[in-house]
Length: 327
Image (cartoon, rainbow, N blue to C red; front, side, top):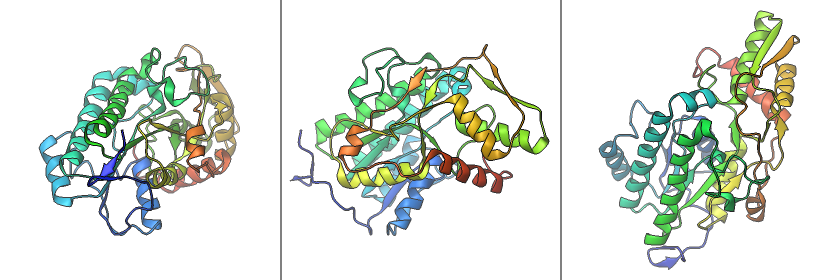
């Protein structure tokens, strides 16, 4: 179906820098990077509320806020997120909280005629044994990874809601599926974070304390793709200005490394010189998760920040903010 704004066929182009731009989740890893990118790109009215100021699970509060601010553009970057342990321990929370956040924000955006919405999902939406690299059309073709299936189902629902709005209302809403993200404002909790920030904290603390060893979960053999949050933010703005289509767009680097290689790199960056051990009684998760980023490349965007550079920047940020960060 052709998307339209006020009955006129929609063609992607430069967004209005004077319009109100609502970033849901503007303090998080992705949201804060998007805010930085928008402000650096000349957007003068970027708005957001902290979770303490606005509970996105509260439908009436979300409708009131969106109705009051009347944004022209929305990026839905807010989500309850966590690593393998958190996802497998609290599946109800990850499903229920994320479903409510998404439905409330998307419904409020629709009720208030938001022109352009970008819904952000996660690469965990794809089947555990999807053919690598994973194409967008792999969605709903196989079983999910059991350790985070509840979170994945919520994100799949967000994609389908975005597609449904396009079909039923003809609005140019889109969705993007990032690979594993890292950078400033990440969650560095030892139990609730994703693999890379958890490793940064673990190795930095070991380097500081002079520990002889660090023990990581699993075998270290799974392969993962990592994208710096600032690259993700750049891709988000690019997609909003250059892409319009019903399919979600994968956002990544197009290359991956083993968890063992990541651990070795972080050890080097943090200055840890001890031994790395692997607890093979703990789960590895998906054996490989590499995204096919051909659609994104066709839209004219590629990642710019190398993994080594990105990790050095993230470790510096972590050390500068270690007393105030989440976790």
